[in-house]
Length: 386
Image (cartoon, rainbow, N blue to C red; front, side):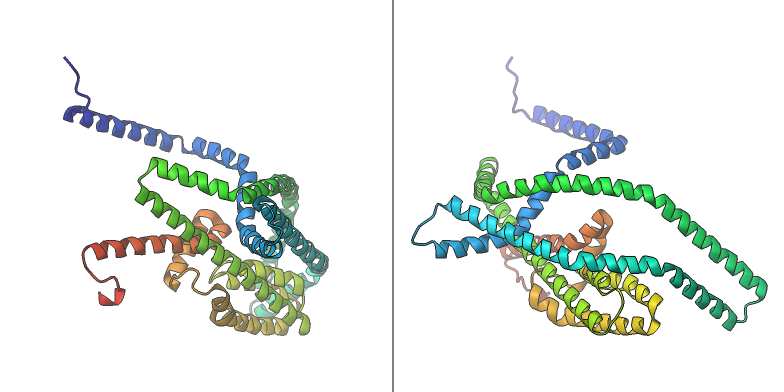
């Protein structure tokens, strides 16, 4: 008797077996989630240089394209080999990056060290100032001597706990130093990987297309390729624009603080620049510790800085940011907040930064799919029609 492999009951049995195997694997994964996450963390640690290389190549790719076009026009008569032309463009892009990094380090690091040294030297004075504020506040509210003594004890306990925490933080700094050293090693290998990625990006793209068309239908492969192009466009436009916007805001902040003689100008400008990378909430997150730092020195200067930072963020949100970023995301304020909250909850600060362009891609994908389905039904695609 010949067995029918295409029979109805055989196919149902295969589906049932597949569901059972999938359920067993999923249950085993949930039961051993800590072990799985540990293996996943180790695997991601091994891939760290590759991740660094990919990110660096992604950041430098627009610059490499620009220098390729420039060198192609300049060397048009000589008709250089495309690989040589790209190699020259990559070399110039890395040279520009090196000059920018060295310039920023040379300008900021000495001033940052000075600001941090001044801050450390002035901590005892700040402690006395804060203590006087607390005692004056208690006196204004006519707090009794016993209650003031109790508050003083609590205050001393807080300071002792802070000192003990700082002492315990020393081993953490040692681990952080080791982590920085390992990070430099990974970054070193990441640079070489990024160079190879930039040199061979066309080959990688063709190989990926070849695999896609081999394992899927042409229409599906075309959609995946289009989605990839759209994702690259959104991420490149958003991240490059946000970096430029943050650098402009940081430079304006530094010039204003230096002009008005506000304290810790380099340190606070760096804080404002870094946190400005986080959409919407970043400027306020960076402004809070900055205002507190200036408040310890001079409340009047802290008020001046607060007014300035509010005006600066208004200018950035209404004029500078839109001019640079344009319509790179196409998301409303509500979806930007959702992207920041979800991204921050999953991946911290990095998630807050990449959450907005990631959701923009998902939003565009859903919108395209919905509009395609509506067209098939002969219905309007404009939201105002509903």
